Image (cartoon, rainbow, N blue to C red; front, side):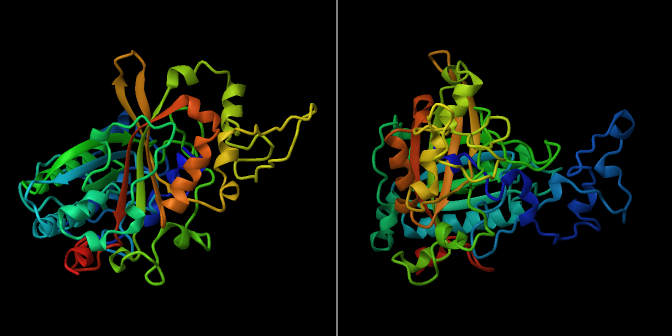
Length: 432
């Protein structure tokens, strides 16, 4: 679970609005956006006097205040949504297996249905048919829906020759305690939104769209801090209380696309993966009862950063470069040799980097009485062997944090580039 790994794309809590479109479609004289006037980004809380002012009472033509509900990500584009957008407050990860006898034809029809649904729901519209009305009163709420293909998909559909070499199974790691029933899958869908009902509505619609073509293999549900919950924009915290994502790659960096996305040319990947990415998904349980028994200072030595500010133990602020050689008065390294942040640094791993975009999870109490909680780790990279595998192998050999975590499920998925107008996700693979 690398230092950058429990993170956010673009310092994520601050970012959901960066991928927002102001385009909306008018409905019945006034759009859903026009009806969603609430004070969101400023953190204003309405008291008793304001509580009676609902969006439905906003006069026609009034300029609404900003709202988390009206933020909208775009379905069509160079890349699929849900990769570079900021962390969302609610998420669902779900894998499907194709039904027995389902072929390439049925898979193509399914991806066509799913793409239509994703486009509609991300725009804040209802499902094309039999909508459940769960999200009736909400706007798009930064909803993103992302689709990927697992290793087994290609043999199931007769497309073995189009399977990327990068989808070879991940190696075993010493911290793995993997449940095969909750790992891998033919198809993978990532759903994220800043409203729980919007996310659930998308999940149910995607499941219903699967029909007889595919069945759910596993599903995991997660959450993050709601954008705007803090007084200022900042890196989010994980369930261990650590600031998480300080060193995440940022789209403003010159080599960001090279690290995260498959190039349109000059790559060993098949042509249908152009502008796509590879997602590694890991369910990482945090042994919180053991972790919380540690003193604050011990926790900081395990991670290599101050718990309060995220600053490296060598000094400075959150984004200050870590001084790996700095010693204390006794000559001991200030950042311990086995500190998580030291081992996970890209410059300690041949420049290996991934874009982490996870969700926390809490599934109640396990049979042994401990919290079943941790991280739904999702990371993106152009090459998982040079990204996740390189860093995880290094962590596997001596990361102090490994004592307090357990990898319980795993998956690797090829996520093709975004669909152009009139296309569905994966069309170049399924019809190429």
